[in-house]
Image 1 (cartoon, rainbow, N blue to C red):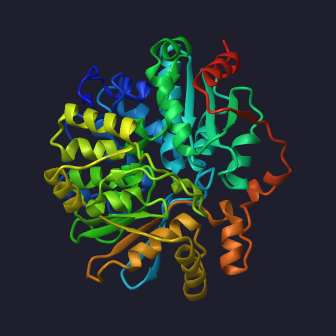
Image 2 (image 1 turned 90 degrees about the horizontal axis):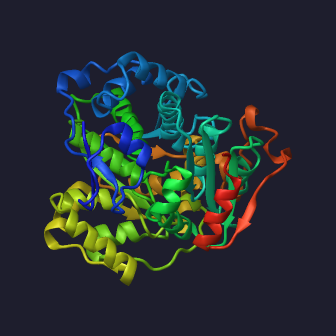
Length: 463
């Protein structure tokens, strides 16, 4: 299995090389050269299997000879051992033919744990074998950072540095990043929004002297291994509802397009997905783009669903690469226009491809709160604001005989203020995190300045 850059000018890499590299040296994102196919019989055979067994079957074709079967099975087992639900990603019925996929039973109560716990084990296995050290730098709108820290804290071959937008994450999200005491963990509160954090991260990857000096590695969803891990729960949930013998649809709350792109990969592999619906909050650039209005940034407005407060959706580049028939030069031109002009127009042919693959919708702040209120009153299910955005958009879709699975991406206790305002209920943290508000914090506030960031990271990392 080989991996190519969405901009067409970087070396072709193996799975392990692509995983350790993160962002391609031409600024693009790595994607598989070909998409492995899973037969109808093999999908049917997943019924009744554990999440770990499904994960091995789905991901194994992508990793080539990086790990043996026994090594990869052990990595998967370690990755999901700390989840708080035996099913890992259980389904809950909300309404006729409408199901909620609970993705918040991992160590940090968010869907990012599915990918980050796996990638932590993959990195550790690779680094132990090579003896190398890396400096992981991640940008987060809230959940990626805590998931990365949880996955890499205390590991001997890794320093992990997380950039998050100062004052724009929930208190629980912040404390999950700032309370770990391990000396390889560094939480940096950047003056700016998530797009600023993400831009500085990409700047570091494109500063090759710094990148090579500190052994920079990335675990944002720019890293293909992150997307790959998320493909698994599309298969596990669809099979639970009768796939491959009947189709399913998915509604996904997304700001950076990684989680919905994993659904697209599942469909490309052969999973019978009818519709993939992108759900956005008031920062609705993806909804506007998929509605034919062009991909044009308009500034980030803080919301009660902060993990979706994004205007530059990195993984959308992967979708564009396929929509433009894998023309790396065309994608590079679009990304140049985004950087210089703040946006770009999508060609008619590519737009048709995207609209054939993805539907979309948006939820305002009031609609998000109203959905939290309504679902708690009618079903007893308490939704986090991100999950509520998706439920609202899913409810607006035409009713069909095809089951709709809505992704619940975070535990409501991560956003207690928004949930309590909508329901009057203060959602408690799980027992294992009950003392989170009592733990001391370690955080450094930093300016939105590349040189200052690079200096700080170089000083903090362990030699």
